[in-house]
Every structure is written in structure tokens, then in C-alpha cells.
Length: 353
Image (cartoon, rainbow, N blue to C red; front, side, top):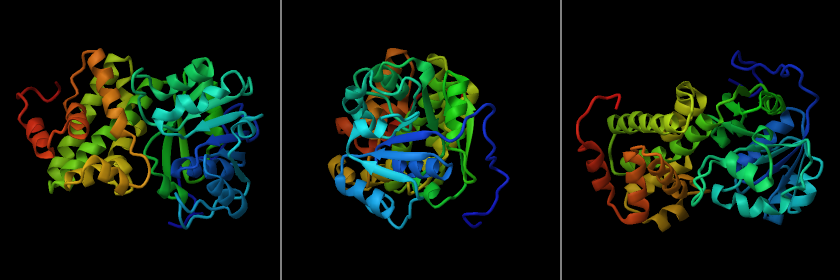
């Protein structure tokens, strides 16, 4: 299928009552932030990006490339990038945040009370904050002083490098306010990127956060030489523990059968483009965590958020053996061989438990 071929998966019609494409800001010039900026630009939005690197910002603005994170990709016209955070967010109606989850609060704190009163803020991140155990939408609302209805979450089987070359995919835009979700969905609807809306923010975010941890476990098993049966077992049982945590936090069970649940889990666990899967494979092959981080391009969110997810589960009395095992391997010296043995030697019980 060519990049411009029409596909039945996609509808580019505007959401009911949606306005013209909005002025948008994207914070973060990594692969996903840059890709989402390109999606917004293709949808007709004027896009400004913020990043720490003046060199990367200059590449984006002057040459329409991001050689560090999306080599070989020409970005659409209409994207400018700057290291001036205030200038980037000034007047933006939509502010999308694609930063490492553990740095969000520090980066965005200076913006508290200073963004456009009508702006909505969109989390592109999939993690849980260490210490607070807050989901990313909660961190954004707390840091920026926003009501929950002005925050949205984008999550799904959205591997950046595939979307950057216009391979078709779908995603979920979740917000407690349906109008907010509709505005964001309209702003990013293009022929290769199909947004669905949802009001189950908790379920959408938990699916995105826990799948990173499960992908690390899958990668560890694959790096150790295990095959498809082991992979399928970890994915299936990983979904089961995600659903248990979701139930404890009030999420809707059907969310985990959808794009932000099973869809994202399968893509992240199966693809070599997944940083979490890649880092897990390096660990499984015998690398130390430091070596694996160096060998993996970009941030593997599950490395840090596995501890926060485990803390969240323990606080609510939820059993998450795969998450516990991943945290033990990465941060407490448990050998990968002991992890897989421990997971398969757990007491027998009914599958639904």
C-alpha cells in the first residue's frame, strides 16, 4: 500500500462541532513527539515544537528533518522548533507533551498558570511517576493546575517510525470531557492515523504504562532464547495483571480489549521497533542494565515506571507477578533465568484468577 492510498480504516471527517485546525505545540523532539507533530501538521495544524537541543530544533525548522530520532524522514511543512518553552506554548490551543515520564513535572512546572486558558493539554506519554504513583494525565493536571477535563491522553499501537512513513494505524484519544477528546481527535485525524475517542482515561493510561513493563519481560525471555510459546504466555498473563490493576482503580474492562490495551500490548511486545522490547532482549542476552540502556536508542519507559506500577499495585492489594519480576531483574539483581522459572512455578489456579 502506498503512503497516499485511501484506506477504509480511516475517516478524515471532522468531529461534530469541531473548529478549524488549531494552533498546536508539541513538547519533546524525540521520535514520538516529532512524529505526532508531523501528524498534526498533516491534519492542517500550525505546529511549534520545543526541545532542549538547539541543533535538533534547527534541523526541524530549517531542513524539515530530525536526523537523530527519525533518520531519512522528511517532515511536512508548517513545523517550527525552538528551545524557548514560553514562546512555543504561547497562544497554543493544544499542547501535546512527549517527554520522559519522570522529567515531566520538573520541565513543566514553570508553565503553571501561564498557558492559554482555553488550551487543552495532551499526554503522549506512557508511564507512572515514581514516588507519587500518578498517571501522566494526573501529573499534567497537578503540575499545570488544570481540571481533568482539559487534559487528554493519546495511546494505542503507535510505533513512531511506522507512523512517520504513513503506515496506517489507529489510536485512542481519552479524556473525561468528551468535547476535549473530540477536539484532539479532530486535530490529529489524517488518512494514516485514525483516532477513536474514549472517556476511560484510567484504563487507557494503565494499558499504556503496564504494556511497557510486559514488553521488557517478553524481551528478556526472547533474549534468553525462549520462543513464541513463552512470548504468548507472558503477553496473555501480562494482560491479565493489567486488567486486575485496572479493576482496582475503576477502569472499564472493555478498554483493555481495545487499541489502548491489547492493541498496544501486542505491538510493543512483538516489534523490534519497541525500545522496551529491545532493552529487555539486551538484558536477556546478558547485558547489564547500564549496557542495555546505552545500546537501546531512546528512553525505555518501563525501566523506571516498573517500580512505580508495582508500588501502585501494592498500594491497592493487586498481585502483579510479571511486573514484580521485571523490577527484581532490573533493580534488585534477580537473574533472568530465575525470573522465568519463578513465573512458571507459581501455584496452579484457575486461569481467570
